[in-house]
Length: 149
Image 1 (cartoon, one colour):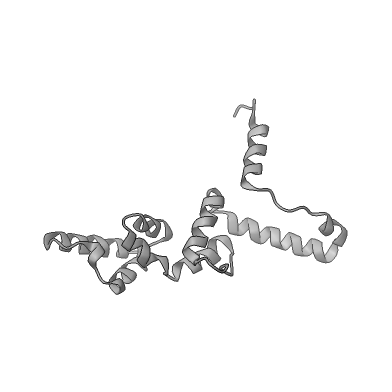
Image 2: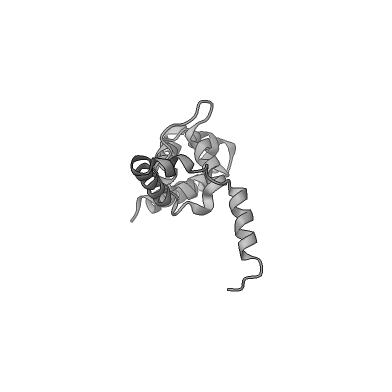
């Protein structure tokens, strides 16, 4: 059984026990909630954050958000005034549709950029900044108009 399933089973068992005692899961102390949340993957944890403000508050500072920022978005530092959960959520909002391949593409681009910088400095100096999500969507829609698949 995976850790995610174990966490969900634990959550379900605790919820059933609390329901029989008329206890609300959000009234659990922080430490058991953190332990339960630590077994969840990012999608399930994000869903838990939407259940109630207490769950969101408890999940807010979990170290998993930092790990996921590094793994999925290759972000190594959290800007001042933000936390890792906020940063992950912002990246997900902007680039979520590329979540499954973003890290691979970014690593490949970084390798190309470093090679070009080292071996082709004139080409490197001519590179432009990347496009925004809106610019990508606009280009894709222009390219796809009138085409059938």
